[in-house]
Structure formats: C-alpha cells, structure tokens
Length: 246
Image (cartoon, rainbow, N blue to C red; front, side, top):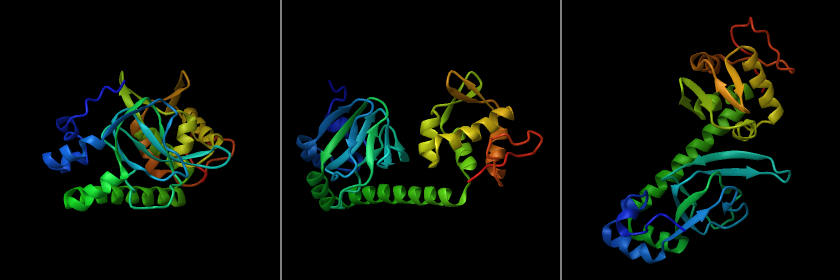
C-alpha cells in the first residue's frame, strides 16, 4: 500500500508541483498516481516511450545504459525529490532504462497532463527546462571524464563520493559491480585499482565492502593520478602516487 497521501498540500511540497498555483495543482490531482516499485523493477524500460513524469517520494533509482550482454553503465543515480521521465517532448523511444535500486515510492503524472500544464505555466516549463539542462551538463561532464581521465582516477572519485562517515571511517556504499558501471570499466580493472590502493594502506576490505582509511590521501591521489597502473595491479608502494591505466 502506498504510504504517500496524495493531496494538494503534499504535492506542493514536491518539485514541479511546487512551481504551480493551488488551483493548478487541484486541476492535476485527478491525474496523479502513487506507484511503488520493488528493487530491480524497471520504472522506464529501455526502448519504451516516456509516458509521463515521475517524482521520487522515497527510495533510490538508477538510470542505466545496457548492452546485449547485460553490462551496464550508470548514467545517473536519483533519490528523493529527483525527477525522471523529464524528456517528455521527445517522441522517440528512450535508449536508457530507469531501475529501482531500493524499494521506491513515486508520484506519477501522465505525459498528456504534464504537457498541457507546461503550456499554461511558463514557470513550470522553465523548471523542467532547468532539469533537462542540468542532466545534459552532467552527461557531458561524464563523457569528458570517460575520454580524458584514467580508469583509476574515475574509481578514486567514486570512492570519495559514494560513501558515508561511520565511526570515524569512510565506508563506501557501493560494491565493485556498481563501481564498474559508474566508471565505464570492467570489474577486473576496478579490482586492479582497489588492490593497488589496499597495498598502499589507503583502502581496506571489510565484509565485501571497501573502507577508506585515509580520505585526504585518497583525494590527493585523485588530483595527481597520472600515468599507468601496472597490469597486475602491484605498483611500487614507494612511489608518491599510484599509476593507473586507462
């Protein structure tokens, strides 16, 4: 059963709806649905048409590109109050898929209702344009990272960004498979990079998770990681910075 109570007041607390007047929200209320998805379910399948706008109430989603062998590249990670399905103007089918990482609760508004609302409300239209522009900018940044940075540098950034502080330690929230999907590399290459960092005492393993022992040193590595990691991942621990392969 959905836990989100769908009223004009609760909708006004969410992005997109917050840009609308009370009367406009009331007009849209009959079209709004609250949908729940279990982990692993697709909110938007690859190759499908975008049928509406989704706003996350709780849970996490990932936007992925996947090949015929099942290998994934994570385009974006989304959390509460983020939107997906914002590219409503395109009539072609999307090449991306939106998948639930955890159990999720979403507010859904059909495409036709959204487009009619955007025609009436310039502020809401500018909000959607800002979301699309930000996603495009982020995609270009990731393209630049893939082209210009080494795999090692990209892994370092994920270790620094995808974690949380716990008992004075930085615990990485994602495993090797997700890291590989985030950086556009194989799990084997990610394992080489993490092995190099473990050998240097910067990272350690605990119950199949990675813990960063020295975040400041890892951040320094991210700034200076140039050159190439040896194929076997056993770069000399006497070198000032690890060398990572592309």
